[in-house]
Image (tube, rainbow, N blue to C red; front, side):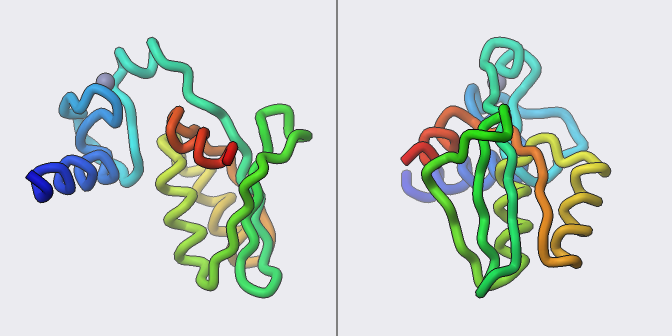
Length: 127
Ligand SMILES: [Zn+2]
């Protein structure tokens, strides 16, 4: 039962099944949690801005959609790969543009990207 559950989680993370209703998603499968069309329509995703900077590791902060209100939870990572993973997990909308912004920020040591978080991911940042 445990392995069944973890494969569901893995498929969700790989963008193969809807993160809410678990229905299979059509390809292409981009890494990160995604929603099917029905769930996306039904459920508003939380648009959050991830701001990151290389300061003694990688410091990640989150802002509400108004770009003024910081979310209470900030994260710090040792490697930029972790920042990338965070963005991918939170980014059902990792478009080419977002990806370029992410890469540019990681190269220059400071940047930010828009994320679209699930209710659960958002709640975790709210602390
Ligand atoms: Zn769904």
